[in-house]
Image 1 (cartoon, rainbow, N blue to C red):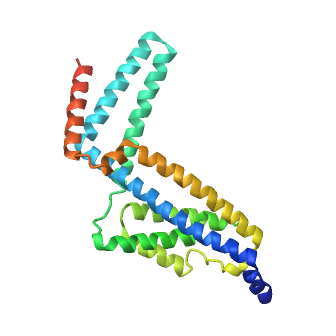
Image 2: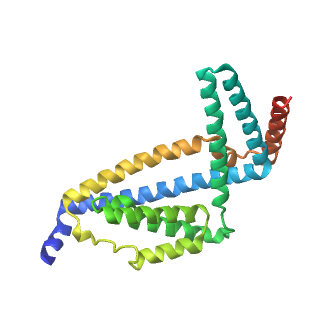
Image 3: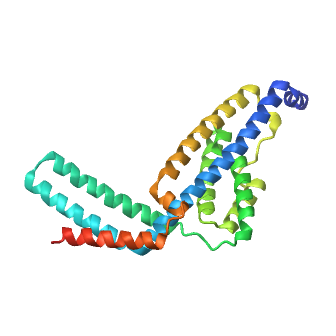
Length: 244
């Protein structure tokens, strides 16, 4: 069995596929980090939004919903009922996004600790990404749960928790990382395809995140103080008009 595994790692096709997998794993880890960074910026915007105009925004949406429901009750039209449901969804989504942002409050992390945080995050993503374990449902479930904890800690800039999670991983408390000699050519090909699919999905998700206005406000040099002041004024005027 040992001889068979040694031969496997020396097979040119296996070695080439394994190198491609390792390179793509690094790319995926970088994309996961970039995605988490985008999500952090968006959540930071909504934390600021909550503090500056959150109550006013939810009050405005609640009034819009109340008026839409009254209109739907008076007319009985399906279009008005659908409009009311739309306002309800907007109110629910706004509350959810703001509450999620508040729940993921970042810790105060020194700038000098950022490189360590990023290094540990990439290391953990490379070792524990669920795509590594697609052929083992139990391990895949463990890896998925681990990644949820890791992403949450990373977005909160919680270096001690990231350190602990990486230590658990490297110590084998999550699961033992398989040795390269245990992978067949077919397994490596499947793994490479899953990584390619994940790379494409991450690129699409990042494009969607960076297109969000919240991300752009946080990254394009917008004067946020002026932005929220203008937003507060506009919302106040809209609310006053609706309440007449």
